[in-house]
Length: 258
Length: 263
Image (cartoon, rainbow over all chains, first blue to last red; front, side, top):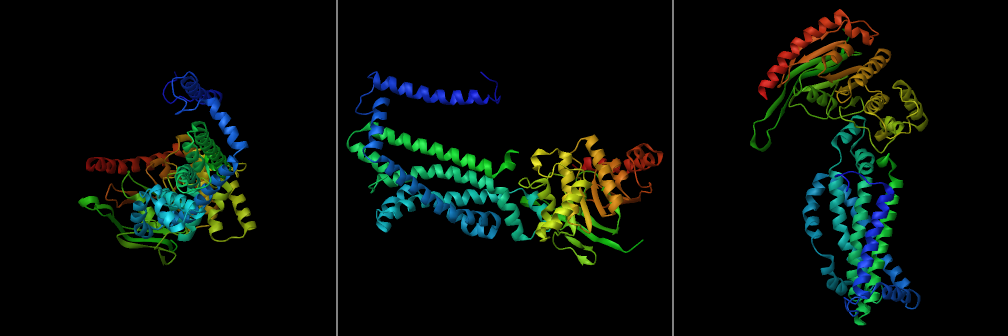
């Protein structure tokens, strides 16, 4: 065992990370293929892969994946467009914060999933309803987190900008925003992960396409292999988007790592 | 003496007490006239209100009473005419060395070509040639403060304010930075207000040392330093320097003891 806080090498990190996946699948295979768990409740890994292959080749599951990704991104981008500027304004201007913060804090605790029945009434069961679920689930979170980040900007940087001749708007544009850009990107990465849980909830009810819809359909058929495959696909897409976000942040903000 | 460029007139500062505590008087009414091209060091024990005084001149803090007048204009807010170098490292981490130095020029919409020339000249003056494209994180503390000095000077301020800029540096680096700053001053004759608690630093740099008392701060002594220019670090061992140092050590010691009794 290493001593506390002692770093591991890059190669050891990769090997260790992969080995848990292997261990996990092995335990799953042992429990199912060994006959310890009923096939009705839990498919074994091989069935899962076969079901997945069938889904992809015969039942047009790729379209479902595409629809779900589109919904997540659509709702998330809309939320970000509204929330990031509001959050920056709230962080920068305290009267604005005093005006909005209590409401946003309250709205943040309204569960997006509880809005699903209401949104179906308002917007039907079309795409707009799915986008709205994700929008409601993301927008208040982003506003608050961005406002907190901007509000915590180092005061001495702001003071330095003033002594260099910046006016109030210059401080917002040339200090508050660039200073917090990496933090805001990190917040978006985090909330995008949450958006994935909202989209599945939205698709479980009143939907005719998407990964969530496939999972509900498979439940009716007791096709646990398909259900697990759907869940794993969500995990993999989440991992990929997370990785892409991280890579993007690294290339956008080289000064952080320098 | 020429007409002062900066006058501090009966400036005092009282901080309101937090949570019902009694208000804290940081600075007694203080007056000071700064002549053009003066290099004034303000020397005092920690917590004596010297930084507060400097922040009031910068416009970052407001006096409870009194006023500060720069070139006939009362100071109400911070501005580009008073360049400031802080004790903490305040370079913008997302900008390169060159972009940091150009920051003030950009805020004033100075054309790009002119900006580039000014930046290049200050890069040379502070000895950072070859580091233009580095980010602050890649620089040592001394290099960061050199950039900060260049950034403040590039704006061509009427007065340069420095708040213990070398306080966080090691001894050798601090000594080199003092010579660098003094060299720039000897060439350009900027008006400088420099806050420090280091006696040697205060004497070596200054044409005039202002000694402040323990909190609440007020001016205790105003000593003109007659040491000739250009000054070399070897001067720190001369007898004239030692005499001044002994005199100031005595003044400061009393205040430091008073400060430690209060706290």
